[in-house]
Amino acid sequence: MAQPTVAIVGRPNVGKSTIFNRVAGERISIVEDTPGVTRDRIYAHGEWLGHNFNLIDTGGIEVSNEPFIKQITAQAEIAIDEADVIIFMVNGKQGITDADERVAQILYKSDKPVVLAVNKIDNFESRADIYDFYALGFGDPYPISGAHGLGLGDLLDEVIKNFPEVPENQPDDSIRFSLIGRPNVGKSSLVNAILGDSRVIVSDVAGTTRDAIDTKFVHDGQEFTIVDTAGIRKRGKVYEKTEKYSVMRAMKAIDDSNVVLVVLNAEEGIREQDKRVAGYAHEAGKGVIIVVNKWDTLKKDNHTQQQFEADIRSEFQYLAYAPIIFVSAKTKQRLERLPNLIEKVDDNHNKRISSSTLNEVIMDAVAITPTPTIKTRKLRIYYATQVATAPPTIVLFVNDPELLHFSYKRYLENQIRKNFDFKGTPIHIIARSRK
Image (cartoon, rainbow, N blue to C red; front, side, top):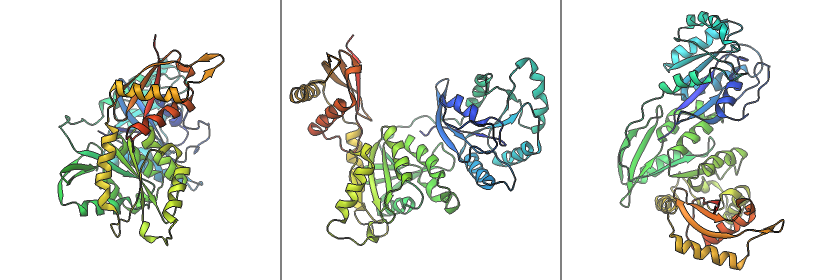
């Protein structure tokens, strides 16, 4: 199921980005002692005591005529709407300000669990400084120091206590897929067209993500589940105008999918945001299909499709394994092919190759193109075995993993793909020392 989401909110310059970077484990947000530096929501994955979650850093909420303040406030309010738990951060050195109280008013209306973090308490002997913050009405304030990393454990303990309960997993043989992409590529229209074409809609099943509805349907005897489609349809134009919003939607949908449909707009061509969103699906190791929508709107000749496909392969080199299909939600052109293509990609994503057959392919590949020699040391591959599916993951036992250059790893992957149908799924190849 989709991971819970934690949003860090507060007025500008209380240390949200510093805490975000500490929890995420890397320096993702720009940390600068200037209010308003973080203008957009920034996303990462966090983990605490075995609990994985999505983390959002937000711009500070403030009512002002300063440049970007309206946009920052809008971004923060969207993050609040998406969150399962909110960390409300204040500055312990400055006490409660009017801006803090305005943020608190917004959080009261959200009806979400709020954990109050009092930052910049660098000396925990002065914990008495935090008692004034009880007046904000969010229960116990948690003293922390972003600069020194103090108190984060207690804070995160309280955060995970407020995660929504995950229902017990029910047996589900359906293929779960989602449609991701930037705003205005036609995701909602495609969802409605797919469901409209289906002869049997089984049910709408509420997910753990707020306002998310997973819709089940049957096509040629195979059950499918469209992940979080109601969220896409329900939010409407106000949210879709905020381009960054689509990133959070995409991350949540990807988490809960077996196969991801990356939707492009044929009228507008390929944009940077398309590549960014598609990258999340690739990095998550999901099955991927590239769907070019609004194909009916283009004036075409004998080379239009071939040229568009070449552009996609050039811009999405990391998705060379993904099939491309040109469709129209409006005319329903080629939509009848989508369910079967999704089923095929899901099969490939879960394919398992016997060790004996896999080793034959690897040894033949080495015979055709011998392993490289680096600084007089030659790579030796002793044995190969597939250790996981979804995505297919292959371990090579070698004399020294450092000798497996990425170019030779890519060559081996290409040889594997020549011998087995892994269309639509990434393949992970891992080198391990035989010792």
